[in-house]
Image: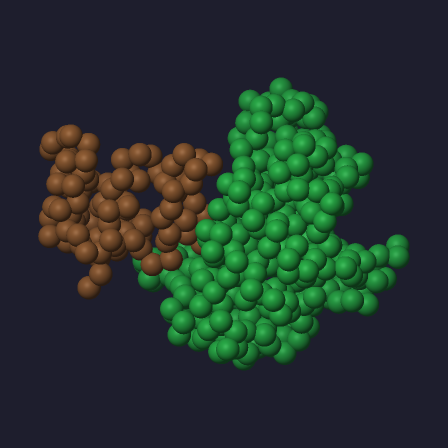
Length: 371
Length: 92
């Protein structure tokens, strides 16, 4: 442990794991079916008030699909009056004229709308629902209520070759920001990784198309392209280090230093039902464990870059190597880097798709929970 | 780089919010999923950009508030930077 950390600037509330979509790359845990007891409105409001008092400024309302909560407007209104900058992260399913107006009146600052692909067939296949036309309507509603149009499209092997069409769709919707975010391989994404990881050539082409599109649209549309970290040689500074700025509360009230951290073995994460946000953030072993650098092993411990990337992602280290204190194997200095290279090499080979995609739904989650 | 004239009336950019944060002892600029912590002079300039006052009026007010003179070049340079980043906009 090092000096007392700063405040949890970024508070993410995963209000529910309920979701009308069943996306194959969802970052929710595969055993979400175990989580049945969601926090009530008053609990969420208390969490926001306590976090705000510590200095939290950014609030994400996410899930699952946050619109599945009927008290979303109440929560958003309270967030606004507390002084949060409030971001709704949504698939748009359930957003209609009445609800968007209520959210606007509540003071919601920002809506990020996710799309699975530019075509109805792919959107509907990848999310295992029929939602494309509904989402297009939602995009128009967002515009009408004077929100900037921010689209998020998760990329992977099955849609990355459609980047041009995706960007054309975004342009047609007058999107101001487009985030082309490659899948992060946690949760359902990890379970489906071999089917979702694109080849290096696919990534290269997609980046090229994106750059051409940027040159064409200029300032009108800002496009972010997030490369899958498997193709990098250094790890991402995940969460800026666990317990440094990010606080996630999941539907049952468990507080986590990142969305995926509950998988890390040997760590106990506190619950907001029984502990204050202040004690969770500053005093709980779960949050203190990976602060500073005393937990690090070689090659991170003596690495001059440890202050820049904090050893990368603990969950990725655990998923690949079985030990969360190892270097993130994305780093080519990691003795386990070959595991990432092997996953990338598998993605290069054309193969028979014999393993079915695992859609994120209750039945699959129950099956995975019982393993 | 955009420049800004003395008679322009800059306002906070759409989607941005400016507020004082005691925990950081600073003005911060909030935008979708992000935050900029402003230093003291940037905070003092930004909080005066209300879409009503002109650049000249804001500069005069700052010079008076801080007992300084010749702030015009610094204020204009910061505002141009802020316009470029859409922290500020010029209402039509």
